[in-house]
Structures are given as structure tokens and as C-alpha cells.
Image 1 (spheres, rainbow, N blue to C red):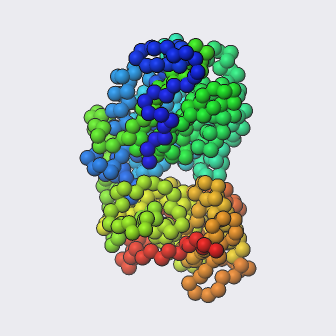
Image 2 (cartoon, rainbow, N blue to C red):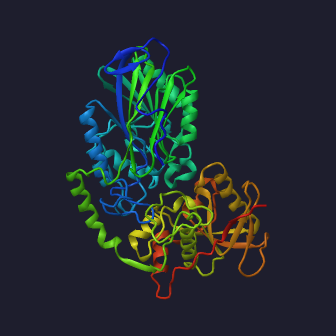
Image 3 (spheres, rainbow, N blue to C red):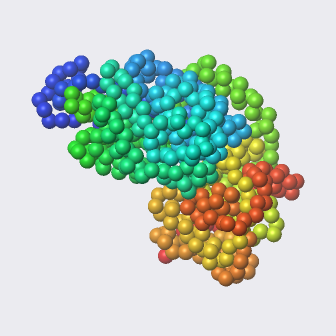
Length: 528
């Protein structure tokens, strides 16, 4: 998917008489231009990746991303524009074995070398609660901004995390406000330890403070997602630019704000596959009169920074012994994204990450293995948002399974009636209808058919016996779901079956008689 852009090259806004300036025709007299470069949702992708085999070589054309490539682009952009403002929109943690096995210190030390002007917090930066945030704050060199987060009194580094920061470029004061998605309360395991202010209230408070300090330009560094960011662009006066994150969207758009000003909204996708970059030209009233999108795909054409690459190679070497251990063997690729009709699935290199939906082979494989951890259990459920990659054809390693399920979660057993299960699946479908696919349930032990409008309870089928809405069943789920993740009900009564979801699945797959099952298509959408 290419970045959206309004016009190629420079886009001009205004209706005044033309003025020739610097080789470009401006429609209102320019006062200054500011250059931005930004990243978001890097999710621990230190090295190039593709969705179904996330670690791959730098010369493979289908492999994108990598911190060393990002640094190369940043250095080149700053050579061209020494005053460029570098920002990150959050979610640097969780997503690969670099974080799973070593947590966040390596990631932060590498990002320090990029010299960010400001970063904000993403929901997945809280996946290990406030512990990793505290460690992050002892290492990170960039200002961390988050205006709507209320930390508990016991959280030590809270005074180091500011609502906003002011940076100066060519005498211009640029106010940068950090924002975190309210979804953190339901979508992230460690999100329960914080409270949140209303977004618009938090933004307006900082805008008011900025006006007193003579700030000429306001940027929202927003980990809130496409829908919220578009609403903020249209409804919040005085906002000039929104650097977006959370939805993993590659975009560069402009909107007309509440007071008639132009608001630019830019985000750079997922995992460092792309990097955002643009120039905004302002007039003497502080309004955007022109802009240019300079975003780039981070691929094999961009040589990695040698010094950083050496550091990453050392980190990777330390992990290889563990992650390369074979667990099982797969005769076919186990895909995460449903192939298109007539697509040959001998190679999954071109498939990009998106949640495991509807007919999802890896969802079946993981939930099947989960069910095998406890023979007395009836069913096993996994939320699609936890499934981040498929498995390759051939040897399946520890690293492959970490990439497929990168989040730390224990296995818990809960009791649900048949009617409660129907509502449980229905809740997952309702979040899918609203555009958030994370709650879509992958299941083992049953199959289900759902309706196109997602509002009806699905029809559940068992391989043997009849479905009973009144019967109580034993269901295995990740602790993330049991604790109310993705908005599912919180289970006050639950039993921990295994301290690690992934270790439990690996133990099952290592058994001598284990074989990856064929794809059953156990989740279907009816056309009725």
C-alpha cells in the first residue's frame, strides 16, 4: 500500500496573489518551513522482516524495515535538512523475540542513537506493566510526552514523563503533545495500572499552556488510531500536525480543522516498513500554506548504517542459539492471512501483517495446541490480535513461534455456559464490525458460523454431540483475555494452567506424536 498523498511534489494552499520564492510558486507569502521525519509502531523489528518469516536478509527484495536502515534514512534526511524534527509515535516494544527474550533495553539504546526530539508511549509499551516503562525511563535520551496518562503515585519516573515538550527550529517554537489510546485499558495486559484523562481535555489544556509561552506551531504525537486522529484534526482548534500511530496505517493526508486551518496527518505503517517524512510551509500567521510528502519505503535499496548493524548482529547472535532450536515440522506453510482465491501459497514472503481473521490457519494451529495442554478442557480460545505471524514450511523453530505469538501471557482455565460462550464469540465479532479485529476469536474444539452484520450470536457446531446453551464448559484462554483484554468480561474465578502460553504450546509441539493438523476452515461467514 502506498502512502496517500494529496498532490505529488509540493501542494499549495490559499487564494492570494502568487509570489515566486525559492523556485516554488507560493499562493500566500511563506514565513518558514519545518521538516519532519517520524516512526511509529516499530514493535521490536530490529532487523528486516516479512510477515510469515519475520527475520530475513537485507538483500531480499520483499523484506522491509530494520533499525539500521531507519538510521541511514534519518542521517540522510538530516544532511538535507539539518533542522528536521524526529518523532516516534509509540509501540516500540512487543512483536519479535528481541523483546520477548531480552525486553526493552536493547531497543531503547538503539533508538537513542537516532536522536529523537520527542517520543510518546504506545499501548504495547505497557505489555509488561509499569516495570519496563520504569526501565525505559532510566535509559532513554529523548523527551517522553503523554498528556492524557495519569500514573499511580507509586510510579517513580512519572515526573520524567511530561504532557508535552517545546522544541525550537529557526526561532520557531513547536509544541509537541503526546497522546495514548484509551484502548489500553482493555487491549493491553499492563494497562490496568494507569488512568486516563479525556483526550480533548488533555489536548486543550496543553494548547492553553502553549499559547502563554508563545508557541507558534502545535503537533499531536498521537498513539490513538486513525478514527480518533481524524476526529481530532477536524475538531481541535490550533492543531497543525498530527503524527499518528496505533492503526498501523501508511498515510499522509490533510484535513480542514475547526477554525479553518489545514491540519496534516501522517503515519508510517507497521514495524518500520516505511518511514514518514514531510515538509510543512507556514505563513506569517502560523497557518500551513504548502506541504510536501517525502515518506519512503524502507527496503533493500536503503543501505543499513554499518555501526548500528554491527550492534544488532551481536544481539541477534546472542539469541540465535535459543530461537533456532527446531520444535516441529510443517509440510505446508501455515498462513496468518487468508490467501486470495487461486493464490499459490508455496511462499508467503509477500504477505503483510494483519490480524488473523475468519479462516486463519495459524489461529487453528495455535488454539489446537493450546487445547492439547489440558485434556480435560472442552475448548480453547485465542484473540486474533495476539497472533502476529504464520509458520514456515519445513522446520518450525522457537523463534518462529515467538514471532507467531510474541506476547507474554499465561494459560488459564475458566468455566462458561454455552450461552456465555455464544456471547463471548459475539463480542469478538462486534469489535470486528467496528474496525478493530483484535477481539475476533480463533477456537479449538468447536467451529462456528457467523452472520455478515456481526450482530447476531454465531451458530456453534461440535464435531461430536449437540451444542447445549445451558451446559457448563471448561475453556482455556490466554490470561490477557481472562483479565478483560479486548473488552471481554473479566473472570473473577479462574485457574492458571501454565505460566507461559508460548512455552505450553512449544511443549505440545515437541511431543513425538505431534503433527501440525491440516486446515479445517472451522470459522465460516454465512451469506444468509
